[in-house]
Length: 359
Image (cartoon, rainbow, N blue to C red; front, side, top):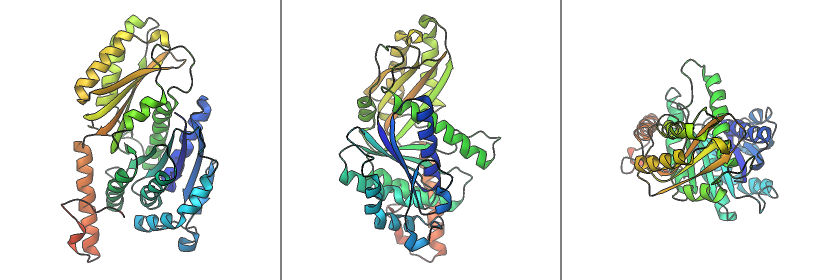
């Protein structure tokens, strides 16, 4: 699937660079262009991809300090400038646009829903958000920001592929090491998903193409991505159980949004050497996935890759609110309520016990 990436804020810029680097190193050519946009000049300087500094008249290149309302205001003011900077990058070859952002900060959290709305107004390809939820250990301001941003961006984007910061971080890592690991994990998993159908090293029996990714994300709302890999036998007949186990692990323990299982649509991608992929294993895995997700639309296919391992990617579209996501929204609401009480703002900012939208 050929896409253009726009990274917003510090986390969005770093992840966009990691995705672009992985795609380049693997030779997939799925990422056609990438741009990092930020209000903080210092966060743009280490990046190797093209960058754009916005909001200089408001924050002088020093960032918004975690204020996502200010981040949204600046993006609204700079929308024309950003769209002009994308001119020539989003060509007829692009099959989708991904806005990449950490949802807990200021620039990415506030800017992502604004930019998604503007991009949908201009372009006739799907506009997705790759959003990163803050971990449980991150401060209350990040929880509140992410709760409001998620509500708004889920409304504005065609779909929001959600990554929980706690999902792929090892317990023995520092915060900085954890972020680096997460970026690498996301780059590999999302990179493989985007590359599906783009590079063919062998002849798969049922190769995934970009339309299947797009159709899986068509329900909108929240999407999640699961991944698992294992050493594979050279004999496909011996990999029946391997493939079914990989699909189970990808959904039940390797997903970007823990405990998110029920969904409207699903896509199962098995990556590896075609001669190692068991058709019986794939069909069993798809059948199990239908039962487990409750979806009547479970697509599937191969991604031929030269490797002695097999990997399973499970993309879920229209994910039902999981216990983990509900717990996050509850924490975000509590953090937001505490913040508004400290500012002596009326409790009426909450409607129906939900976080108010960002704009």
